[in-house]
Length: 156
Image (tube, rainbow, N blue to C red; front, side, top):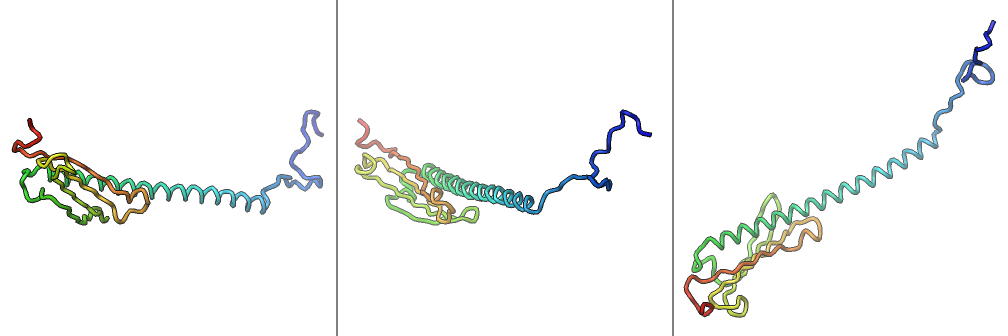
Protein backbone atom coordinates (compact mmCIF):
# COMPACT_ATOMS: atom_id res chain seq x y z
CA UNK A 1 0.00 0.00 0.00
CA UNK A 2 1.24 3.41 -0.88
CA UNK A 3 1.31 6.22 1.59
CA UNK A 4 -0.42 9.49 0.92
CA UNK A 5 2.90 11.35 0.84
CA UNK A 6 4.47 9.09 -1.74
CA UNK A 7 5.41 10.86 -4.91
CA UNK A 8 4.67 9.33 -8.22
CA UNK A 9 7.79 8.14 -10.07
CA UNK A 10 9.17 10.93 -12.15
CA UNK A 11 11.58 10.33 -15.00
CA UNK A 12 9.76 7.27 -16.30
CA UNK A 13 8.38 7.26 -19.74
CA UNK A 14 4.67 7.11 -20.40
CA UNK A 15 4.98 3.44 -21.07
CA UNK A 16 6.39 2.95 -17.58
CA UNK A 17 9.46 1.08 -18.79
CA UNK A 18 11.71 2.68 -16.22
CA UNK A 19 13.86 4.58 -18.79
CA UNK A 20 14.37 8.23 -18.09
CA UNK A 21 13.04 10.67 -20.61
CA UNK A 22 16.20 12.82 -20.68
CA UNK A 23 17.20 14.06 -24.03
CA UNK A 24 20.88 14.46 -25.16
CA UNK A 25 22.46 16.72 -27.74
CA UNK A 26 21.62 16.00 -31.33
CA UNK A 27 24.29 15.53 -33.94
CA UNK A 28 23.45 18.89 -35.54
CA UNK A 29 23.82 20.75 -32.23
CA UNK A 30 27.18 19.10 -31.67
CA UNK A 31 28.42 19.98 -35.17
CA UNK A 32 27.28 23.60 -34.83
CA UNK A 33 29.03 23.98 -31.48
CA UNK A 34 32.23 22.49 -32.92
CA UNK A 35 32.12 24.92 -35.86
CA UNK A 36 31.68 27.86 -33.48
CA UNK A 37 34.59 26.65 -31.34
CA UNK A 38 36.74 26.22 -34.46
CA UNK A 39 36.03 29.80 -35.61
CA UNK A 40 36.93 31.15 -32.17
CA UNK A 41 40.08 29.00 -32.08
CA UNK A 42 41.23 30.17 -35.51
CA UNK A 43 40.65 33.79 -34.50
CA UNK A 44 42.78 33.33 -31.40
CA UNK A 45 45.50 31.59 -33.44
CA UNK A 46 45.64 34.47 -35.95
CA UNK A 47 45.97 36.98 -33.09
CA UNK A 48 48.77 34.88 -31.64
CA UNK A 49 50.64 34.90 -34.97
CA UNK A 50 50.15 38.67 -35.27
CA UNK A 51 51.62 39.16 -31.79
CA UNK A 52 54.59 36.90 -32.53
CA UNK A 53 55.35 38.76 -35.77
CA UNK A 54 55.21 42.19 -34.09
CA UNK A 55 57.31 41.06 -31.14
CA UNK A 56 59.90 39.76 -33.59
CA UNK A 57 59.90 43.14 -35.34
CA UNK A 58 60.33 44.94 -32.03
CA UNK A 59 63.29 42.71 -31.23
CA UNK A 60 64.86 43.60 -34.61
CA UNK A 61 64.51 47.30 -33.88
CA UNK A 62 65.91 46.89 -30.36
CA UNK A 63 69.00 45.12 -31.73
CA UNK A 64 69.35 47.81 -34.42
CA UNK A 65 69.33 50.52 -31.75
CA UNK A 66 71.92 48.61 -29.71
CA UNK A 67 74.20 48.25 -32.76
CA UNK A 68 73.91 51.98 -33.52
CA UNK A 69 74.69 52.93 -29.93
CA UNK A 70 77.71 50.61 -29.80
CA UNK A 71 79.11 52.08 -33.02
CA UNK A 72 78.55 55.61 -31.77
CA UNK A 73 80.28 54.87 -28.45
CA UNK A 74 83.26 53.46 -30.35
CA UNK A 75 83.53 56.63 -32.45
CA UNK A 76 83.10 58.87 -29.42
CA UNK A 77 85.88 57.08 -27.52
CA UNK A 78 88.60 57.61 -30.16
CA UNK A 79 90.65 60.77 -30.64
CA UNK A 80 89.24 63.49 -32.91
CA UNK A 81 92.07 62.91 -35.40
CA UNK A 82 91.71 59.09 -35.47
CA UNK A 83 91.39 57.44 -38.89
CA UNK A 84 87.99 55.99 -37.98
CA UNK A 85 86.67 59.58 -37.89
CA UNK A 86 87.79 60.43 -41.43
CA UNK A 87 85.19 62.23 -43.47
CA UNK A 88 83.14 59.94 -45.69
CA UNK A 89 80.52 57.23 -45.80
CA UNK A 90 81.07 53.60 -44.89
CA UNK A 91 78.64 50.72 -45.33
CA UNK A 92 78.95 47.43 -43.47
CA UNK A 93 76.77 44.46 -42.70
CA UNK A 94 76.48 43.17 -39.14
CA UNK A 95 75.05 39.78 -38.17
CA UNK A 96 73.51 39.65 -34.71
CA UNK A 97 71.25 36.91 -33.35
CA UNK A 98 71.13 35.30 -36.77
CA UNK A 99 69.77 38.44 -38.48
CA UNK A 100 71.49 40.82 -40.87
CA UNK A 101 71.69 44.57 -40.30
CA UNK A 102 73.02 47.16 -42.77
CA UNK A 103 75.08 49.84 -40.98
CA UNK A 104 75.82 53.11 -42.73
CA UNK A 105 78.17 55.59 -41.04
CA UNK A 106 78.37 59.14 -42.41
CA UNK A 107 80.99 61.56 -41.07
CA UNK A 108 80.92 65.14 -42.26
CA UNK A 109 83.23 67.98 -41.18
CA UNK A 110 82.22 70.89 -43.37
CA UNK A 111 80.43 74.08 -42.40
CA UNK A 112 77.48 72.97 -44.55
CA UNK A 113 76.60 69.82 -42.62
CA UNK A 114 77.87 70.54 -39.10
CA UNK A 115 77.95 74.30 -38.89
CA UNK A 116 81.73 74.55 -38.61
CA UNK A 117 84.81 73.00 -40.15
CA UNK A 118 86.06 72.06 -36.68
CA UNK A 119 82.96 70.05 -35.76
CA UNK A 120 82.39 66.57 -37.13
CA UNK A 121 78.81 65.39 -37.50
CA UNK A 122 78.46 61.62 -37.14
CA UNK A 123 75.33 59.84 -38.37
CA UNK A 124 74.92 56.10 -37.89
CA UNK A 125 71.98 54.50 -39.62
CA UNK A 126 71.12 50.82 -38.96
CA UNK A 127 68.53 48.98 -41.05
CA UNK A 128 67.36 45.42 -40.37
CA UNK A 129 67.58 43.66 -43.73
CA UNK A 130 65.78 40.46 -42.76
CA UNK A 131 62.93 41.98 -40.76
CA UNK A 132 59.55 40.32 -40.94
CA UNK A 133 57.24 43.36 -40.83
CA UNK A 134 57.32 46.57 -42.80
CA UNK A 135 57.59 48.88 -39.80
CA UNK A 136 60.44 46.81 -38.35
CA UNK A 137 62.55 47.29 -41.49
CA UNK A 138 62.64 51.07 -41.04
CA UNK A 139 66.09 52.35 -40.22
CA UNK A 140 67.29 53.59 -36.85
CA UNK A 141 69.52 56.68 -36.80
CA UNK A 142 71.85 58.01 -34.14
CA UNK A 143 73.48 61.42 -34.60
CA UNK A 144 76.29 63.08 -32.64
CA UNK A 145 78.73 65.94 -33.06
CA UNK A 146 82.39 65.94 -32.10
CA UNK A 147 84.31 69.17 -31.63
CA UNK A 148 87.99 69.53 -32.31
CA UNK A 149 90.11 69.92 -29.17
CA UNK A 150 92.05 72.64 -31.04
CA UNK A 151 90.33 76.04 -30.81
CA UNK A 152 88.86 77.05 -34.11
CA UNK A 153 86.54 79.59 -35.61
CA UNK A 154 83.63 78.55 -33.38
CA UNK A 155 85.34 79.83 -30.19
CA UNK A 156 85.43 83.59 -29.75
